[in-house]
Image (cartoon, rainbow, N blue to C red; front, side, top):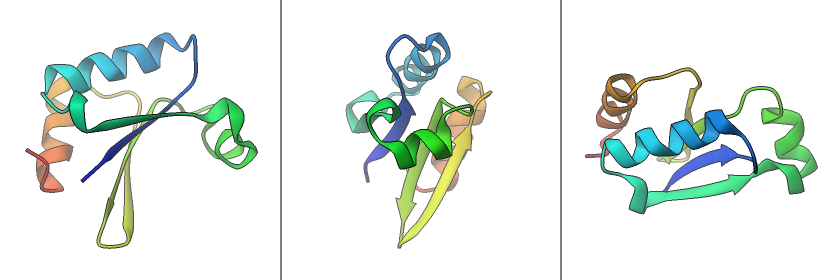
Length: 82
């Protein structure tokens, strides 16, 4: 199940979020999406990035910043990501 990290270049919070994804051991499953090149994504996430997103059975679940490694791990576990 791919994990999406909505981000943009130069976003230090996004870098921290990616580091947490690495820390919890799922970095290889992460698809980083730069919102700067998509007007719809920029409109939706422009002031809220970083956002981690999963699609499960056609439903989208998102975890918005701020979060720590424990919160991220618990969120991922609650969605069946180990």
